[in-house]
Length: 282
Image 1 (cartoon, helix red, strand yellow):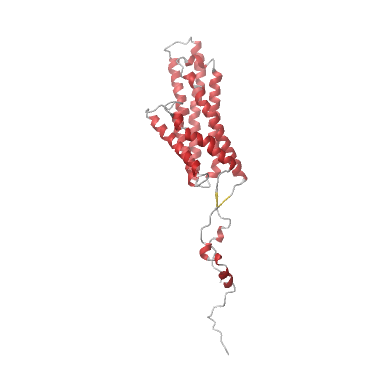
Image 2: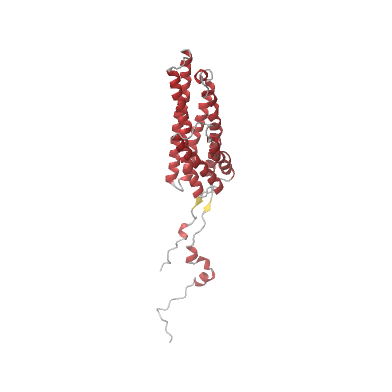
C-alpha cells in the first residue's frame, strides 16, 4: 500500500491563478500608486469664490491707492478734504472692500489647504487677518481727516497751527496702515500661500513661481522701506513695478486658472487596505 507523507503540503488550488496573474504579487501590491485627483462640489464653489475675491480685491485696491493721493499731496490738502469728502469716503470704502476680500480668500482656502498642511494653512489665515486689521487703522486715519478738515476750515484755515501737525500725523498713519506695514504681511501671507501651491502642485508651477517671486519682492521691499532707505508711498520708488508680478498673479493667472481648471487636490487611494494585505489565514 502506498502511504502519503502527512508533512507533504497539499497543492494550493490558487497557485495557478497567482502564476497566471503575477500582477497581484506582493511586490506589485506594495508598489506606490499615483494618487487620484478629484473635484467635489464644495471645492469647486470655494475655487470660484476665491477667484472672484482675488479680482474684487484688485479692482478695489488698485484705484484706491491713487484716488486720494493727488489731494493729500497738495500743500493745502486740509482745505480740500471736507469740501471733497465724497472722494475720501469712496477711497475708504474701496479699501474696506479690499480688506474684507483678503480675509475671506484665506477663509475659503482654509478647508482645502489644511488637508495638506494645517500649520501653513492656519498661518496664511492669520497673516491675512493681521493684514486686514492693520489696513483698517489706515482707513480710520483717512476718515478722521474729514472732521479735522472741517474744524480747520471753521477756524479760518490758520497756517502753522496744530491742525496741520495733526493732519500730517493722520496722513502718515494712512500710509503706514495701507502700504508700509500691511505690505509686510501681504508678502509673508502670499509666500505661505504660493509655497503650498508650488509644493503640492495645486496649480501649474509657472503660476506658483510668479506668485512666489512677486510676494518675495513685496516682503523684502517692505523691510527695506522700514529702515527709510526707500519710499513706500503708492507710486514712489518703483513700488508699482515691483508689485507687477503680484498683480499678474492675483488678477490674471490664478483667478483664470481657478475658474476654468481649479486646484489639483491630491486624494488618497480608494482602498488603502488593499495595499498591505494580511497573510492568508491558516
